[in-house]
Length: 343
Image 1 (spheres, helix red, strand yellow):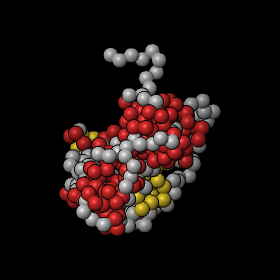
Image 2: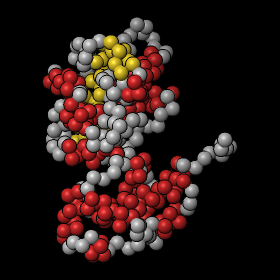
Image 3: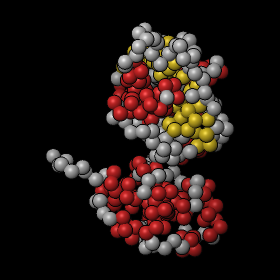
Image 4: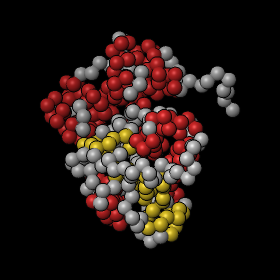
């Protein structure tokens, strides 16, 4: 957290609510920091000592109710003084690719972000809040992350930002960004740890039943939930590869099926999909293996064979690198505990 308040006063955290933002992300931050405040005060010998955090819900517009995602109203005050940390929740997205209209309607918020950054506030974007930060020009030449289904859109819209689609939290200078909706909890615990230390962060996580901050979004990635590709050449190549998931990869056969040379295949696929056909195929294979391990609880070796890997160590290394956890851990994470029965 680049800017901090003196320890004798609370860290001023302002959560910027705006039309269409995700209310759960705003309140996740506020409520986790409230829990940290309560725990920090437990058993204190110095009554009246200031809590570590002061949290307020603010707006870039007129004070009053703000209609957030789903049409619910949240009361927020004008931002006023510059906070130590300004948190930007993500926005509700109804259709892929509608960024122009959505972000054009949020110019007041972008103006407030630029002013807060200029005056020294740290900015923390949750989920699609990173789009507002980038739209305001505050992530140029910085590393950032966002919700994994929209990392491709993010990279295309903001090529000057170095997007890390797998990270849960990225900190680069005064800018913090985090992954999808529940990463608001990871970001909250990060703030608690920075302000109060690892011990209070662990206690807060235990009381709120939150895992320790996660390192990767990969275990949650599911290509079937991603927005449809708008690039027909790459989509045709992906469909061809997906239909032959367990077959050995042959670039010449894929190129012939698309009636192009291997060099043209690589160039066009990379331009449209941002990766190589082989890298996409490996990711798709690991996605399918994860689905088998999660859904049917099949053995790791069986999952490996189903996606074309006869060598278990090779499969396990690739799965761990691309999914952020071992195949066994993935399988175990989705097993029902003993004594838990289906309704």
